Length: 83
Image 1 (cartoon, rainbow, N blue to C red):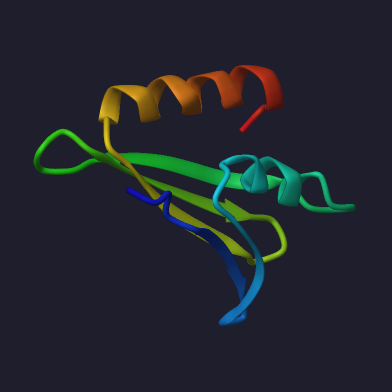
Image 2 (cartoon, rainbow, N blue to C red):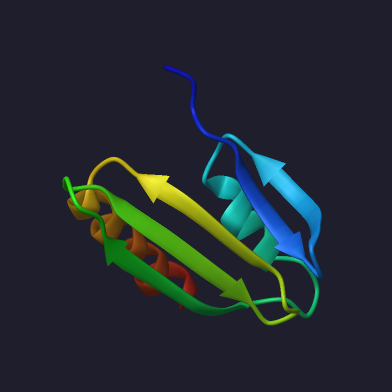
């Protein structure tokens, strides 16, 4: 099974992409850009949907196969990076 590509869009255009979650943090390290909101939504079947909005209007969505893993990952980002 291949890893899904995470795509960050702004004004309807792709501005970053990767098969690694690190792209979400990397984009937030750009000058004058920060994560303004990040949410975790539980999906039927136990998976989860991560939505991230950035201060410059960019946004990203990605799926996790486990909601518990998503919640743990997001909690760590909030503690370490202030998401």
